[in-house]
Length: 310
Image (tube, rainbow, N blue to C red; front, top):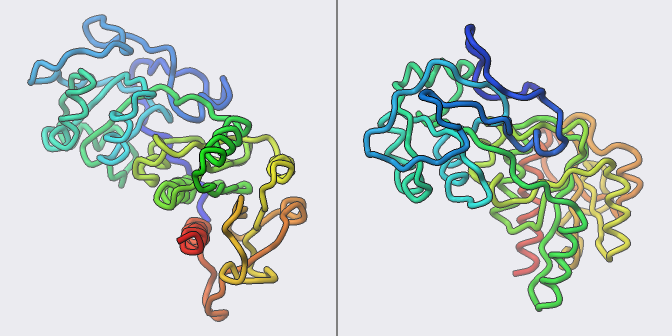
């Protein structure tokens, strides 16, 4: 499994990007951006939204790097439509601008124009940016207690309990992004990750999530086994996915408060995590073929939960 992290646009040779030090500020920096803002060309603060004049401005040559940049049509459109997102800068080619014109107009944003070559130079080779780049600030940090509170309130109102997904040191941003996408599709309550040994929310992760970063809470906890214990005290049943599981998911009752626990590819669940789970389950498949990756296995597990609940 690859652990490469796409951290966003490359730093130019000349000038300073103005980005703060990575890792300072906890979850906020993992979710996104430099809070220092800086000045736009002409002296305007980057944090201010400007009314669109219809033409847009030419993109400047100095661009900050880091995880505060989102790219791709779905990720950018979802961020523009999320009122919790503070937008700092929007850059697009003429074709790219067409795909996000309406949400940009609703936010009162002016698009900085760039050609395809300018956009290519902003990102590592091979990045599928679709001609759109958005600089943002971090989303609010969700905490596990708030997720449990929301779940309890929904249950009291007669709503079905939505499952949780717990990732035990899954480090690949593409996998985490794909898990967020599956969690959103199948109506999970949240995705829980370790504070250490999990990827920051970069443009690559957000693009893999296809907009789900904006709607699916991504909760960081210091210790997965302890988080599972907290859930169990609230009546949750933790099911760890392992190839050596005692039962298949289809043989289990997954209609209650279910937390699906997924391990990293290659290593699987760590020992203490597996021991903390109420049960280990497996997804049956051809024993002569390699197992599913963590994002595909999560999608299968969430589908089975959804199927059992009708």
